[in-house]
Image 1 (cartoon, helix red, strand yellow):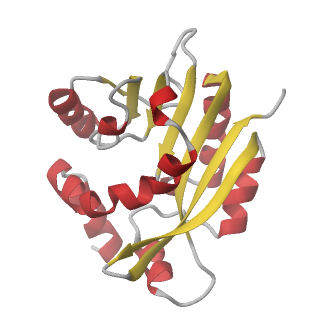
Image 2 (tube, rainbow, N blue to C red; image 1 turned 180 degrees about the horizontal axis):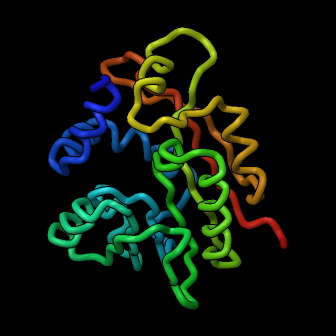
Length: 203
């Protein structure tokens, strides 16, 4: 079993996932918090929500978390008491529900380009007319570095260069913000990431 497969197997454990993410949650979310008034958010759709670690960021919003891992969803329901759904986001029927804040936090680098396009297309349909999709993703730098090494060995197989992320987002979303940023530990850059905020392009 290779290193990536071992990492993936470990992260399937909810406790391991939470402990690994805990030191980086605030730094990863900082660009979103700085650019948006979260108190004004009405309805949140958290796509690839994992075990619900983003829930606490939206205490006053109507929150729905979606993930295809039933272990994560079972844990999130017990811990947070909010609405969590085990589903493929491209197939789940939300009826007439629309969301003004759709969060895609470090999820799309787990899926290939065809499926990433399908996911973004579906999310575009679920946006409130005045809403935005907020995506945070791992960037694959072009040069040798710790961020490139960690991106290559991440359990998500599809970390992309910055230009590819911008192109993918721009196919269906009207850019409101595109911000590269660094996630550090003890002053050392661990990941290069990008925050993209976009509204639905007119049909």
